[in-house]
Amino acid sequence: MKRFIAESSVGKEIVDVVFEAAQGAVKATKEFGDEAVVNGAFGTYFKEDGTFLTFDTVYRTFDRVPDFQKAKYASSIAGPPEYQEAVKHWLFTSADVDITTDVIATPGGTGALSSTMKNALDRGETVIHPDIGWGPYKTIAKEMQNPVAYYTLFDGDHFNIESFKETCTSVMKEQGKVLAFINDPCQNPTGYTMRESEWDELLTFINEISEKGPFILLHDVAYIDFNKNSHNYKKLFERFAKMSDNVLTVIAFSVSKTMTAYGMRVGAQVLISNNEQERKKFKHACGNTARGVWSTVNNGGMVAFATLALNEEIKAAYHTEKQHYVELLQERADIFIEEAKEVDLPLYPYQEGFFLTIRIDDQVVKNELHLKLKDHNIFFVNVYGGLRVAICSIPKKKLQGLARRIKDVLDTIVEDVEEERKRENPAEENNDNVHA
Image 1: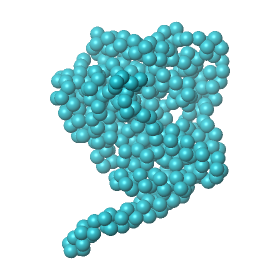
Image 2: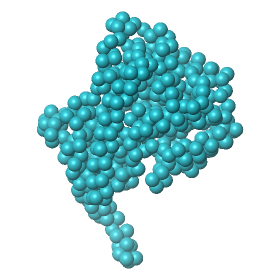
Image 3: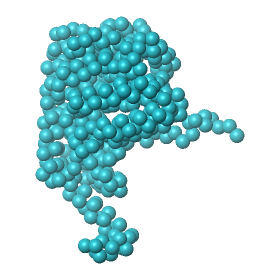
Image 4: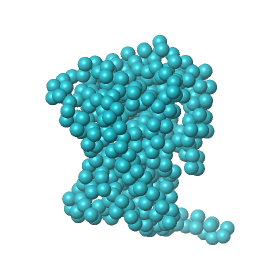
């Protein structure tokens, strides 16, 4: 018997761990007061006084956008010409080479991610993600009906290039095409930024393997403007202009995050490839997806960004204003990381950005810690391999002593779990004693 729901949609259910944790923090704040709660769940920036960060340069620019521009549809599915130019200017001004690109406006960076997957892979083909990564990557893959192959993100304190190579080689051999996600800089959830040498090795490998089939590199740069050295980082894009004709790089750019205007939902797909014919085909396919899924992007937001990006005076003021908050992120991270070292609380390698992650390899311990911390009014996001701490939303005064509080709870949980396992497996305990 037929059902309302399509067979391909049976079993879909959204349980977003970020929103779930954030809602728990909001509820606790109402019950116990703000001072009693550590809200490390929100992925949005809050100032030291606990208020939401909004850049004056952005919102005064938005105020000056005429009402009719805020009300109207965009003049193009791909975004107004001045918006497309602004995106290119913003990303590629630091480049010393000419980078030929196509830009398609998307609702935030998420729109760029989902459109790329939809148009790069057929249903049933495999996409490649980092094992520690933004949770909705997996949601997008499920929506597109694409299985996921994971590469291990870290080898010690650096990017695991060997795992990336092995995973891509296996998928290329299986399906003759690769779509791989890289989230850099300020990786969500760890705050890792790849070294130039790591990028060089990765791109050399991509060029080599592209001889066996098309390689689509999806470079998610959601937090690029909170990188400590964003202008120099953007020089990386020069390398994309020198890739093989069988490589397409798609930069997923989140204007929403750059402008701390998350709800405005403005972003872009930026296509780079020396294979102009195939790049144009991909552009047209993405344009069709835009029309068929979201139609057009927030016009007022695009006009505001174009005004900011193409006016050197406003842009300079924005960078000055933003720099304070980039530095504040580092101050917050330094507090937590230093105290974590003192109490031996393990973290994944962090360089910069909105998040860092407590490393917990034992799944049982990790899940129990996530729950127990809520009893102490400490709210983080449960991710693969650990708990994500959103330092973007925690003021410095609440970070002081936080690592010790977490470690005390963690130590108790580890003891309890070990005792429980010994009770369940007494033979193993006896065996350990014999070998001791």
